[in-house]
Amino acid sequence: MLSSVVGQRIRVGGMCAAAAAAALVIAAPQASAETWDMTLSGSQQTVGCSYKLSIASAPALASATFYDNNTQIGSGNAGSSILGSGLSVSWTPKTAGTHTLTASVGYLSASIMVNPITVQVGAAAAGSGSSCGGSSLFPSISG
Image 1 (tube, rainbow, N blue to C red):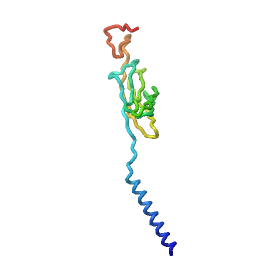
Image 2 (image 1 turned 180 degrees about the vertical axis):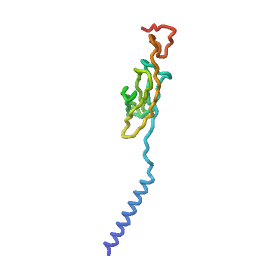
Image 3 (image 1 turned 90 degrees about the vertical axis):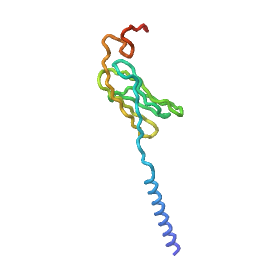
Image 4 (image 1 turned 135 degrees about the horizontal axis):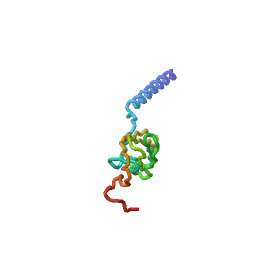
């Protein structure tokens, strides 16, 4: 008789534990992928000019690889400071036309999505080295 009572208590205890575990699974917050935005310096991108492509406020130890139309541009690391320092790379478009800029981010084991940027790159001005934001009225004397 004693073993029957102990057996019933074990079964009841097991069912309570299973019910508690199910309640925790249901009440747990759902994991969602974090989404980050990239920024691109300049407002009218031109072939041959350099621009800064970045992901601001990336946490410490995050790293990213940046792409232009699926061709790797370069990589960056956020550093090891507790606040991170952002991820960035210099981008110099080689062709005119539509460019889709994307990034692949690694941060611990998190799933991080980065919103792509699509830009229209203009052709470089013929015979002018000043199409990167300088004035074409005055020649460069910097060398």
